Image (cartoon, rainbow, N blue to C red):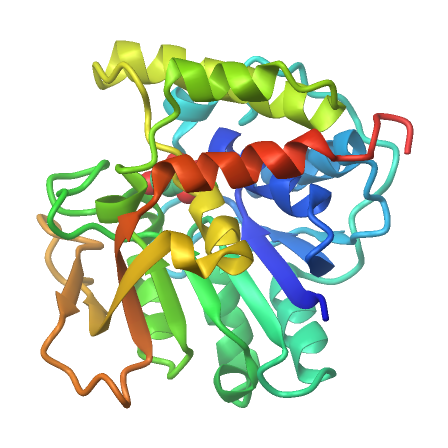
Length: 316
Ligand code: BDR
Ligand code: CA
């Protein structure tokens, strides 16, 4: 049976590879893509998700527009890593299909609550504002959701936006704190694991060589990141963050997880958005799981395989 899935994201060059992989996979019943302001504005992330949907030929999947700003903070943005429009070098265009009616938060709550408890997974690839708003509006949601697979958080690797915080959690720490405290079952792909999944020259070239439109688009964004990471961070091969969520849903055995309890720093400006990961918990009752190891070859093989059989096209 296919896994029902909602993807909440802020594309974003790495969100794009995650989305294109999920669009191409036949393991998912993709109920919706919900977008949020993050890497670029909410308007642009929604447009970008609609562009990617069109590239993948998946107009059957609704795209919703989400929160334009974090719960309490000013919108930040990470255009330096994603390009001013959010999709690297890809020239944005006005997609032919519109966004769905209603907000991302409404779509998440509505689509989950009308299905059996535990049946819908949520992959979160951006700040957690939409999910926090959905949980506020529908208190039964936490118990009704299936696994929430999050890209976010920093522990032993340190942060990527400050010394101690990762961008998605830092951008809206209050939202992340509410979601982690909500009782949702959460699988967390922090920097400790995404830094193990590197887009090496060989891995990008393998995707670039595929004949599909989705693979070509993904490879173009991986190339953009490769260039930017070399200039800004000095890394030869940059980490591939967001697709780890989709990879876990497709093949959880590629990751090692540790049961834990995660809390988010919201008071200190110095450590704003730090994820405090407590491993001294009862494994049997834990509902947070911190990813500690990834099989990077396996993750890239999975992405490459799925992008290789993507059937879409710009016109579809
Ligand atoms: C996360 O931040 C964003 O810039 C990326 O899209 C990813 O979701 C990595 O810290
Ligand atoms: Ca993202």
